[in-house]
Every structure is written in structure tokens, then in C-alpha cells.
Image 1 (cartoon, rainbow, N blue to C red):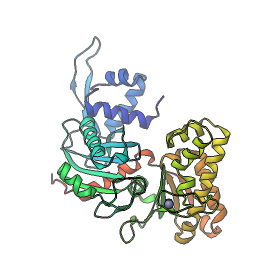
Image 2 (cartoon, rainbow, N blue to C red; image 1 turned 180 degrees about the vertical axis):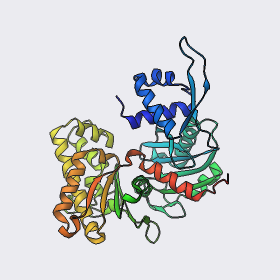
Image 3 (cartoon, protein in one colour; image 1 turned 90 degrees about the vertical axis):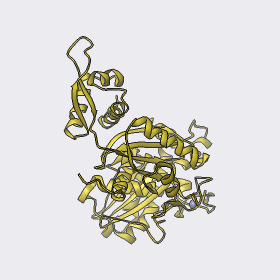
Image 4 (cartoon, protein in one colour; image 1 turned 30 degrees about the horizontal axis):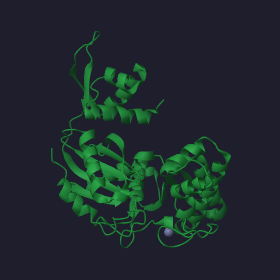
Length: 375
Ligand SMILES: [Zn+2]
């Protein structure tokens, strides 16, 4: 059975697209108990995301109340692109997510077909909704604030692509383009509110991105290219060739792509980061050992950053953060390698914002960049 957060997203997607207009529709489509739907709907009503309106046609019993998204006078479209999947959503002008869906994409096909799909998904999730702004998170180095990709190793055909102007032409609204780890770090910071302190956020997925949030601000660096922890050279890495042209980078040993390649090389049916996660969750001992080793090497790469920056917390997000063994191994290595004076007050934990971190961060950025309507 789905967890409450997933059910909430599924319910919102169904209501936003008009595929469901009542509690009964949700029960039927989601195949869950009426009491479960009632509690999800109650939370959505309390949060002001949806409202009840009139009554629908009875199918025998009491006439159902119609549920619909609260009219917001427009929405922001947000999308986080990965190598093979995109997480695409709509959010209200107060920055809360209304609906999310996942689409299959091929980032290697280049910008045009990928953004055709993103555009189609916006229309599919919220038909008839006015787009007031668009935020896109890309899995490569993005020059900020110009929104241009600089030498993205895993995105053939994208280098030098001016995403911000191209997307402004396409959508005709304010567009914000950022690196995926930075967008996720902002989302994590927003979710934690004042509780975050100075934070190193790591997005461990197919590649590994990072970001420092200090004093409530993203540290971007001279060209906006900070946080490229994936190409930090680590010891015990076997000196493998990296997508950047170098050797021995963290990415070659601790990323989802590296784990998938290692496990496939041993004859396991693994082709993606998702397969790595399934194999680990199924507790194949050889896979768990490999994932633990990858987590330890992430800890090695982060230990130098922690000693240098003395953050209050290290937060591990991205798909691999769902694996306790990976996070625990990174934590163990950080405690082993960092100065005791650094780790005494250091919290190392998995992301609270979870898979929606980047979308929440984009919503925050788009909101800040879009002129607000005066009521
Ligand atoms: Zn590299």
C-alpha cells in the first residue's frame, strides 16, 4: 500500500486532471479504503489546497461533494530532469505542490524532445491552468543566473545550451533554471525552515551533486558552478575513468551509475539506480556490501568539506538516500575521518524533503523571481 505522502500526490494529480472529482472517485481509482481517502482529503482541505464545492450526481447513495483544486489564478510549473526520468509538478503561488507525476525521458535526446514532454506534462497534470512561471532543475553544472549549461558530463548535446532564454521563448513566462542539487538544497532548507543551520546537502542519485547552504543562502561560487562533489578524487577508487575525462572521481565509485555498472558487471540484472535500490532493499548480501562501500567513499569525499566548512548538518538526499545502509556508511566514515571537534555538533541524516526537494526549491525560486499579483 502507498504511504500517505504518495497517496496525497496521487489524489492531487487525479483531482487536478479532472480524472476524479469526489471521494468516491478517489476510492475507486486509488483502490484504497474510504477511511484512507477521507483522511487524505481532510488534510488537503485543512491545508487549503483543495475545496469542496456543491454536490455531484448520486450513483445510488448520498450525493457526493465535488472536490477541486482551490482556484489560484494560475500555477507554477516545476520539473526536475534526470537521465531517464523527470519529476514534473504544478505548485500554487504560495509555493506548495499541488500535483506531481513522473515521466520517462531520455536526457541524451537533447533539449527539444525533453521539453516537449515537460510541456505536455504541465498541460496533462493541470488542464486549463494558467502557467505563471516555470522552474527547471538540470542534472549538470548550470551557470547562474544565466541558466546556461557548462560542460555537463552526462548530458550529450546540452553543453552551452541557453536553457533560460529558450524556455522563456517556449513558455512566455518567467523561467528559472538551476542545478538539481542546488534546487533540492533550497527545497530542503525551505522544509526545515529555521532549523537547518549551515548545511551541506548532497544529492546522491545517478550522479552526485552537492550544495552548501550558509546563513540561509546558497553558496554559488564565482560562476555559479559550486558543489561539483561528484568529481572530487577519492582514494580507494580504483582509478577508473570518469565521464569528465579524469580518473578516480567520486562518481566512478559512489554514484547510482557506478553501482549499476558494478552490479551489472557481476551478472546481476541491474541497469539503473532504481534497480540498485530494489536489489539493496531485497537484501542481496553482495549488493548490500557494495552499496556500503560506496557510502563509505561518499563519507571520505565529504570529510574534507566538513573539516573545512564546519557545517551544522550534512543532509543526504537523492534516490540513494532511501538506502539506510548507504547513509549509515557515509555517516560512519564522516565520524571516523573528521575532527572530533567538528562531529560533536554535526548531524548527518537523510533528506526530510525527500523526492520532492528539488520541486519545492524550484517553486521557491520561481516565486521569488515572478512578479506577485497585487490583490
Ligand atoms: Zn569526474
